[in-house]
Length: 428
Ligand code: S3P
Image (spheres, rainbow, N blue to C red):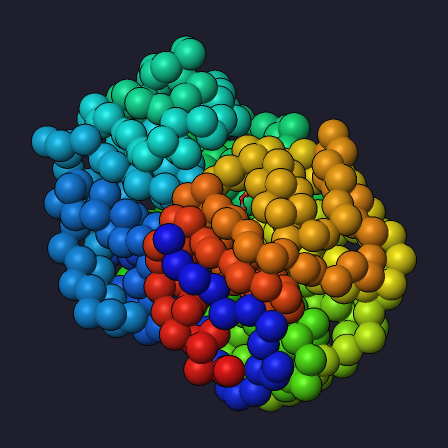
């Protein structure tokens, strides 16, 4: 249990947020199945991405990791070895689902398992299309949940209409498609983050994008490359919101990824009236990034739904906090995916923010937040529930809370942002 700093008078300073989690996973995965060496700069050394490294080492890939510098000695598409040990993905849904896409095309047996949270997360959304392609996958509840056992091999191409806008589903199918003879296609209800598509191209591969439909024609050989990972906008989001809601604040976040499939949080902050400026936008390789400055702002409520949801899905916990400080009623809808994240984030956000005095209700596909509400908790004990983004959101909520707040399971933040508390305290 950790005592959180409350009633913070100002947050001032500059932060270099750590590398993007989604891009870091993909850099290791594509590096492992490419031919030749891949170097990764500003890799995120969070627990999730370390789980990805561990799984590929178990399949014979030499990976050197020194903090945020990584070197992967690629084995080629057919070069992974049958693991002698279980592949443990820890808390990482991205590791589990993208890895399944790669394993589907590998002619060997493997077992995949994760932590308690992973055991509750639906895997059928990837095992179903991968089985349609010909992979043999079994597991708890017919392959819907971990532990899973996979025997991959020769695959047939499919055209898959995904019922969910999920980059993890899309990426798993595209990665399987790289090893498949013919054209594999995925159509999503809304566009999800496109880091896999961009990175396949960076490794010399081909991907076709037509609206909500993405295709790869295999088999494709990828070539190792040098990758710079921009800062994670999903980590920056905690400080973007902190800067807007804590009094007398001005925070600059350097080198933040600005891929348009991820910038929904910036759109929402701007719509709410936040004082935010973006400067020094660059486009190194295939991902744009820049510096963002935010100041204490007067905010008004907004409605968030539809195609915007996949562009800010991981930011909804911190957006809920933001909405408690906006005048009016904020509605978040079309977000039932929140129920199958690291925790059921509709429940964890609503229950934990209520403990601090927020006026917030759960709905079947989102939440309704009535602002502006002072957060006053005489003596609150809040819980991350082992969910990194809930833990970080609560630490920012404490900054504007009058009273004493203790956080249970604060260590969860290390999943995506090991230096989060140091960065937060450096601004005080
Ligand atoms: C991710 C995609 C998102 C996101 C997750 C990371 C990725 O999940 O919530 O944190 O790296 O592809 P879905 O694509 O399943 O929505």
